[in-house]
Image 1 (cartoon, one colour):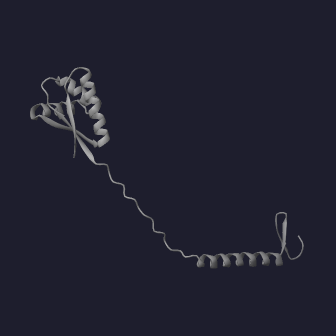
Image 2 (image 1 turned 90 degrees about the vertical axis):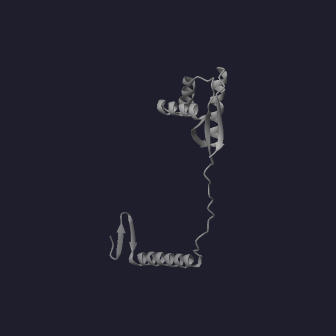
Image 3 (image 1 turned 180 degrees about the horizontal axis):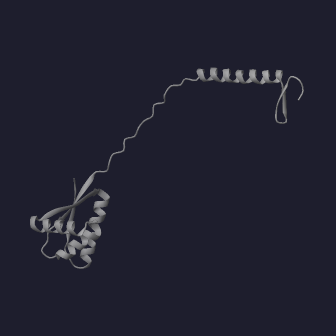
Length: 135
């Protein structure tokens, strides 16, 4: 290396070149800072959309004297995903009181499950009745 020269690897700079690089970077930082101060840093107001939870609907099992209890329990387990104990309680409650809430779902789910259960019963000739009501 020559006198008064600083080198990093194959690049060699003189002191005057370093001073120029240093002055240039300071100028860039100062001009960037002044440009940043010119920009109004006001928080942007964003509209928040509120998403409503879907309204819930009750699926109600209605008692009838013709649909076998075992079939009702089978439908409650298959379509409404109740376990054996829950299905029996719902079936007996509907039998004794005339109606029982099976479960609560959003409207489209409640209607779909009700339709599928009634269709399955009607294919076998059973008059199983379920209704959907707002909660």
